[in-house]
Amino acid sequence: MTPVNVIKVGGGEGIDYEVFCQDLANHEDYVLVHGGSARLNEVSTKLGHPPRFVTSVSGHQSRYTDRETLEIFNMIYAGYTNKMIVEHLQRLGVNAVGLSGLDGRLIEGDRKRALKIVENGRKQILRGDHSGIIRTVNANLLGLLLDNGYVPVLTPPAISTCGVAINVDGDRLAAQVAVALEADCLLLLSNVPGLLRDVEDEESLIDELSSTELDAHIESVAKGRMKKKLLGAKEALAGGVGRVVIGDARGASPVTHGLAEHGTSIR
Amino acid sequence: MTPVNVIKVGGGEGIDYEVFCQDLANHEDYVLVHGGSARLNEVSTKLGHPPRFVTSVSGHQSRYTDRETLEIFNMIYAGYTNKMIVEHLQRLGVNAVGLSGLDGRLIEGDRKRALKIVENGRKQILRGDHSGIIRTVNANLLGLLLDNGYVPVLTPPAISTCGVAINVDGDRLAAQVAVALEADCLLLLSNVPGLLRDVEDEESLIDELSSTELDAHIESVAKGRMKKKLLGAKEALAGGVGRVVIGDARGASPVTHGLAEHGTSIR
Image (cartoon, rainbow over the protein chains, first blue to last red):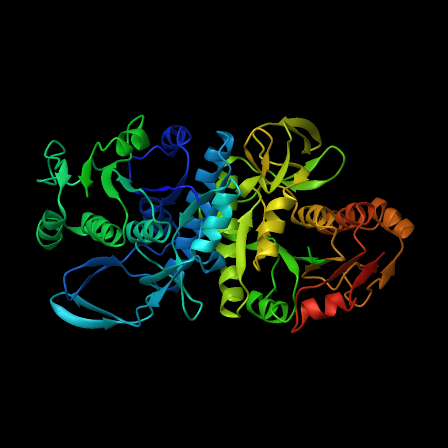
């Protein structure tokens, strides 16, 4: 199989997917992974089931994905966003095929049985959550598509070993796909310029990060979504991926800039 | 390639997809096509964009699919229903892969530029519709999946030659897939027992239909959704499919019953 890059585009506000796809279509040999969180929050609120974010006892924030949230999640990630991106790419002559982690057991993981959370200062056990940790990637199915000229466009959810849909982090999904495909580069693009020294200041970009610095940042600086990106970067590099770039999905040439290491480059 | 059956399950009210999938999982060598209309009507109404049905000058009723409707259509068909079915099948050990007609240009068609409709007795031209007529099926992609042990689970929309998503009728999509795969049998299952002599009386089932009788029924008896099924049956038989059964998707063994020709059998 030809070496590939794995490119993740976030689902936050401020990303123009049409512009993004126009730039993406200038490149070859890649797998795209996408998010959809901003739209999910908007539509689930409209449908009378607003998002609920919980804080784990270890201080991580995450979305509580009950069954109803999971159904709306599928609607937005696998329905709205995935097919909108596939349509853009097809219009540009890219033979995209959109898949969730459920399809062909593409992304398999372990479901978390219960969340240990802290709410109003009290520890609680929260059940009925549909989220989990990725264990395996079906690289055969991806290889089959890539070898036959198709561009895989991937989205959470994943599937548990028992066959239940589970919400998994998109950045870490992209990292696991990059490891499974022995990718040259993992590009994590979202609505920030990269890892910032000061999250309030887009000018405070950290250009480069060594493995040791990465560990330090995972411990200290990074919060929320950026922490997941750094964890993804660590997993990818540990799994043999050549380099990781955390860059900006906004602007006219986000993929070209990212591959040219605009953003935070980690080796 | 092993001979296959093409099985379509409708999206109307009263169908239990979990029960349906349990029966389906007892069979082999098939492609599944599904609808999602009842859920689409429900969710689009909740989202403040209720369905609009129009009557063409030739008397056909259809859904007016403006861009916003198409986006909700993708959410329900490709997101909610497709992934719910894939999850059920995966849990039952069936290696399902869900795809829309956009993916890999699986189902390509011509977009209707404008609808000529009759509203309040007046003829009108309605623009901005995203619907069309199917022209080609990417049988290579389906063959690739089938040959590698995957079960394709297909849903509208299709894609126009210009790369725009178009709403196409699910029964006729199933018919075109059956023709492209040279299927043994096309099974069109929905929330009716088959073709009825009297649409108000579920006991008035017509067991068998010849080609000549089929033409007569297309002209006269059949209305609305049943007309599309009969047109699909005609297209499938003309394209070389061995037999078509229009049957019931409800009950404990809908697929087994359908393949045993419970319903309306057409050769």
